[in-house]
Length: 106
Image: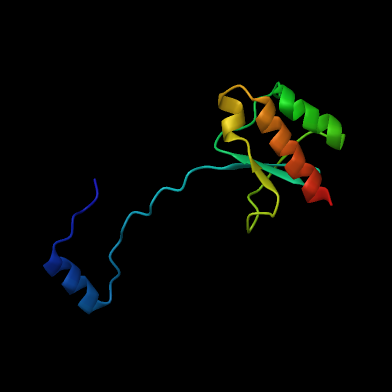
């Protein structure tokens, strides 16, 4: 249980130069993977039998995704796969992604 500081207690701590402890906001966990020049990120780990769309990417880049530490700053080409794991992928989504991928390689 966290202490609830009154305004008088906060003022007293401030006068004594003691910082008031406060709980940090919880940051959501993000998993990062590297697949060729592409970074993949999402709130869940990738499933072991990779989805078909990811298998196509693996064939395209001729390698498998590798888990990596979170980069210092978000890379230019970082694909969030969260929506792609939850629901079926439409042809339009695939086409848009492949167009983005082709334009990024140029």
